Amino acid sequence: MGLINQPMGQIKLTNVSLVRLKRHKKRFELACYQNKVQDYRKGVEKDIDEVLQIHQIFTNVSKGLVAPLEDLQQCFETTDQTTIIKFILEKGELQLSDKERQLKLQQINNEMLNIISMKCINPRSKKRYPPTMIHKALQELKFNIVITKPAKLQALEAIKLLISKQIIPIVRAKMKVKVIVENVTDDKLIDRLETLFLSKKKIEQENIKWGCEGLIDPVSYREIVGSLNNGQVGNIQVLDMAVVDE
Image 1 (cartoon, rainbow, N blue to C red):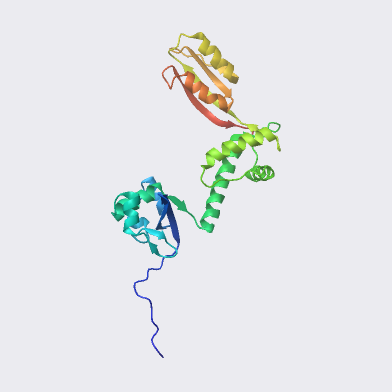
Image 2: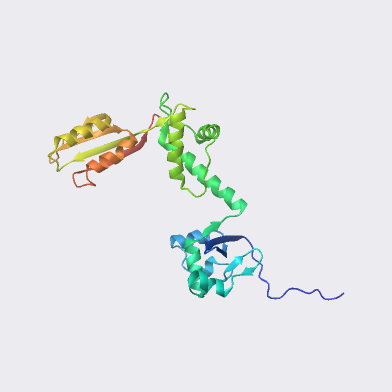
């Protein structure tokens, strides 16, 4: 039996995540390990050789096309591989495989549904909706999850849509807060704060100008914080992020 010729010097790349950057109409790619790019960007991983499958800059990883030095010089004004690789890791777009994309979308979707479930209630029963029911309502509204947006931001967008369309009876749950005003002489400020409470109980305490504990609409929270001048006039304490009847 004759000898089987094996290709020499060939590097097999498995489980590759690509980081791609277009610069001056030219494309550059890095072959990275899954999950390591995010660790690098968060500062958890500092060794780029732990991030890269191969310390090389490509124009096309799948075809094994290495970026020419003249392209690197033209686009990055240097041919230093490490400098350019760090730049691409920080600025480039992470290309996910179909499986990775589906897992990421599922993760964002689950996180978003849980946030909505925690922040919203049925105004009739005063109870939270399970994530499955929220998911069904959003499907009817054809709400699309975006992989590049944080789950919290998409949850807030979904809440606005659900409240405006009322496919299911839904409102934001009220927040329970405690507000103490110490250093203000403007009674108009106190009058304004009182109007922001939906239900309240006065707090009688020495050395304070005014105090109140009760329920507010979540959209009023920022206004209260602004009125208190970031703690210089007084302070707000959140006692319950979402008040419901369990």
